[in-house]
Figure 1 (spheres, rainbow, N blue to C red):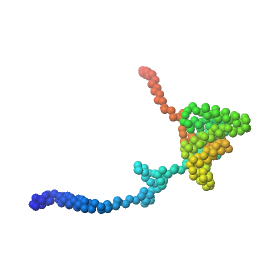
Figure 2: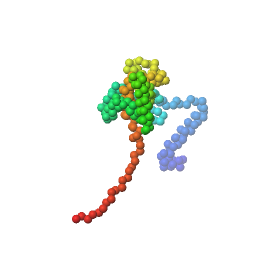
Figure 3: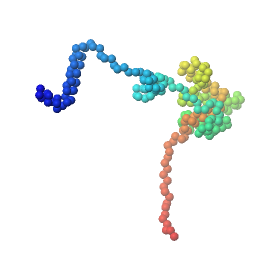
Figure 4: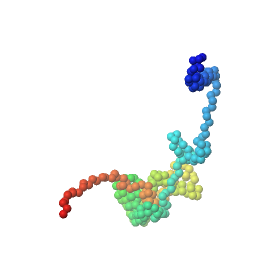
Length: 250
């Protein structure tokens, strides 16, 4: 006893260690005595929506810890708007104002060149301008010669509008009508049917507003994609210094 008292006096933490050991032994004996005992319930945790509601957040969190805006992870993203309207021939007063004027001039005077530049930017392949421009010119000449108006080129150009709409997730005519007046609800609900309706609307836009459609697509591509010719790597040219000579001042 004297030794034990001396140990307790020399180490004041020894009493706490002994108490912890007694508690562990008691817990083990109770667990062995009652194998059918019901385990304690896990701590209650709020759902993510309740936590966000209490904390004032309007987004959830994924398993990777990244915030996801919206109510459900994987919720379809809304369509984006076109940068300019269909009838905005002069574009907008921004840094692309001069480019918009160029697009308007090309669409009014040489639509074949405008379509060629649009297709070249969309495909991001330099050198395809001549192929698209010559094809458009041939259809334009045939349509104006035999039918009196440009009726064949829209069949060739409207897939470009559909490709731009899919690439940048832009809103189509059916979705615009559904958003503004509530019609075309059946076409918007089904994804496949919506895409068919949007393709028909793209074709109708090129048939009845061909020049305006080309100009709108040209403005959209110039704002979203650089010209493929500008993607080349810069070349560093080393210029040797000029020959220098030392002269004696007079």
